[in-house]
Image 1 (cartoon, rainbow, N blue to C red):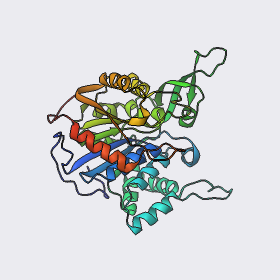
Image 2: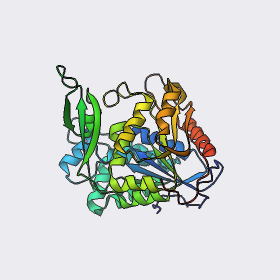
Image 3: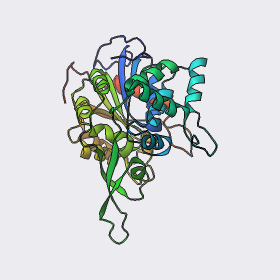
Image 4: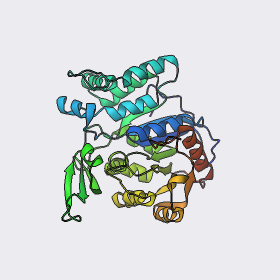
Length: 350
């Protein structure tokens, strides 16, 4: 299924492992800056002609949190807005609209801190009554190459079990609620879940995953942007059953709060604990971020099907203050992943 801003789909051979193939359909799952980096990389891959972003909808902080509280029932628009901007056209019109969508109001009044794009999306969701239709409208406005979809049509809440909050009893666990609280906890996140329980998936997102040739999970805030996709039953099932190559892209460094002191292999262990049946075809990590490669390969083996590999490549931008993926380097590494992938028969099932 294509959106109004989607480039014409050129059907390509599925599962042939050739990086030079054309017409590849890619789906990236995540949220925030990590998803934006993945989308920017996919835009630099000419063999990828169809890009779909599937975005988390549990944000409860900042402008998005205010919109959720004041306009009850609407999806938090912030991560959706960032994905739209990442896929916006790069001509003068696209850049102009993208700059406006990203603009935040200053001052101290009721609009202070709100991004224009958040208010635009909220208004469209209210007037159209359909978040997917609202996103498609903004895709048209920005000249988006691809489509942006929520992982669920309803706003979700996150809850976590956290240890280390009690100095007298570090092993004792506490429950904390809210994405911002989970992301910023000084304790150790043990597991997360969503409310409502067994949340409904956005059907267009499920269709996109099933029809994809390449599915990327990560990078991003591990517990609050990456894992939530595995907690939506229909989306998790689509990830298991898709014939696409499934690639986990690891973060460059642990994040203060939710993954403080996590090793790369611990990130994989968390995925496996929340979705034991998940199988992936490749794990991609920055070479400089993996201190003990054999440990990562051992952890990845438990999640991989036949022919799966760990790929270590230089994918970090040269920014000593803020670790981030460099889109061109990430695109080059993803091409290597595709070229090295073993052929997959059509209709493969995990």
